[in-house]
Each structure stands twice: as C-alpha cells, then as structure tokens.
Amino acid sequence: MYVPTHFAADDVQELLSRPQAADLVTMTPDGLVATLLPFVFDPGAGERGALLGHLARNNDQWQRPVQGEALAIVRGPDAYISPGWYASKAEHGRVVPTWNYLTAHVYGELRVHDDPEWLDGQVRRLTDLHEAAEAAPWSVDDAPGRFVEGMLRAIVGVELVISRVEAKVKMSQNRPAADVDGVIAGLEARGDAAAAEAVRVARPAVTG
Image 1 (cartoon, one colour):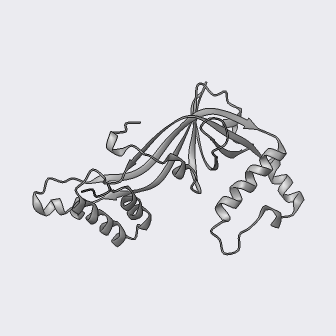
Image 2 (spheres, rainbow, N blue to C red):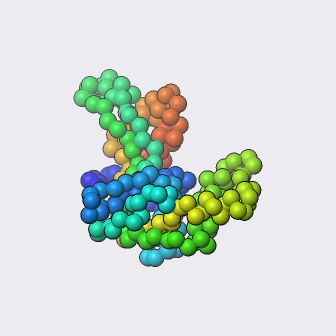
Image 3 (tube, rainbow, N blue to C red):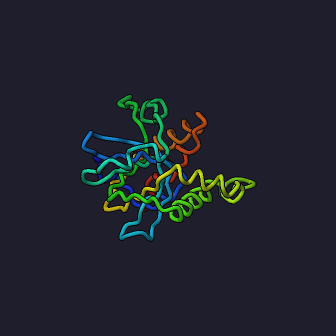
C-alpha cells in the first residue's frame, strides 16, 4: 500500500477492534479468491494478534491451498470530498476533488479451525461484539441448542495470524485548518457523521 508519511496510521488496534467486516483475500493455485466476512480481533494471539472469523462450509476458499500470506482488507469511514468545501477555493481556486478513507491491509498466516468448541467460542465473541450496542442484546443461548449445533456444523473457522499491517488514514490532515473545517462541515451537512468525526480525530493538533 502507498502510505505517505503524513497519512500513516498510529493506532491500528483501534481500527481492528471495531465491530466490522473485512475482505479476506487468498492467492490459490486457481488465482485470487476473496470473501467478505465479519471478524473479531484477538490482540493476545501471536506477536501481533489475529483476526478470527468463519466461512460457510460450502465456500471452498478454506479448502484451497494458500500461496504465501493471506490478506484481510479492513476499512473505516470513507467519503467523497468536494473542493467546494475548501476555504482555499475562494482564495485561489487551485483545488480538486479527492476521497478520504481509513484502511488497513492485514497480512498473515491463515489457519483453519473445524473444532466445534473453537467455532462456538468465535461465534459467541463475534455476536457479543456486535450486539453490545443493542438495547436488548441477543445471545447465542437465546436460540435452541440443537439449532445452534446445526448452524455450527455449516461453518468453518478461520484465523489470520498477523505478521504485518499496512495502514493509512487519509482524512484531509494535509489540508490547511480552514479547509479541514470546511470538510467537517460539508460531511455533517451531507449526514455523514462517521466520516466527519474521522476527519476531526485525524486533524493535526494545533501547536504554539
């Protein structure tokens, strides 16, 4: 990934810990294969942590030999940025559209888990992570036991043991302060609160 110094991400663990999904990409003898899947970040697995998820058993990506490292593409907020939001537009007009985004390319060894106990634990962790914000969180135990057992037989666990991470935060932090203010205001007016907050968090601290 091309990452200019001013767009380098400092806190990758915060991004990986959010409830979200990633694109799992593997190179196989038949070419590239990809699946979108929700995951749980386990910071205590290996030296750099691991991403835990599962695939449908009928999805043969887990059965195909992986050549080299596997890749998970994790995304945060992203948004189109209009040059009309910049204060610089009125000053000199030398502005163009761009795209703001937060992303991490997570590389590592892909391990397959077909143990019911491992799968049960992964599904519970994933469910608890995503249900935490609900007023009445749903639990795996709310479903009949035999039904859950059947569902677990229909999936296969995957664990991406992280070897390296390339992360990028491109959130207008290379723009003058007045332009950043304009971007935040423009995104909020559009109703994109998540992207506006990401710009606010990424903006350089004022010194002096």
